[in-house]
Length: 146
Image 1: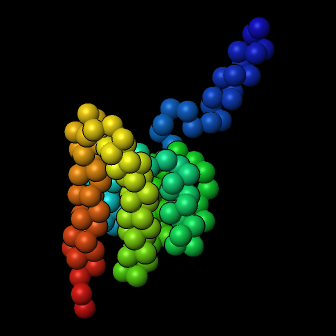
Image 2: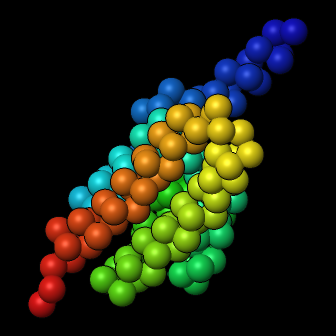
C-alpha cells in the first residue's frame, strides 16, 4: 500500500494537477471579438440554444478549420484561432447563423403543434434571433469597412 501511495505522489508531482502550470493555450492572446462572440453565443440561457461540441466541429468544417474534440470552451477557442480576417469571420458567423436557424426550427414546429408552450419557445427564438443580429454588430465593430 505504501508503494502505491509513493507512486501516486510521484505521478501527481509529474503532472500539472494543481492548476499552476500554464499551457500553450493560456498564453495565446485572443482578440476582443472572441470574447464578444463567446459571451453572446455560448451560454444557452443567453442565446436560447445549446451549442454542442459536435456543432462546433461542424462549424469548423464549414470554414475549413479542423478542430479536435475537446471541452466546449477549448474547442471554441481553437475554432477562433483559425479566424484571421474579415472574410473568415464572416464565414464563421454565417455558419453560426445557419446553425442557429437549424436549432430554432424545431422550436417553431413545437409552437405550432403545442400552442400552450408558445411562450417558452418564443423566448428561445427571440434570444437566438438577437444573437444572430449581434453578429452584424460584431463585424462592424471589430472589422470596420476599409
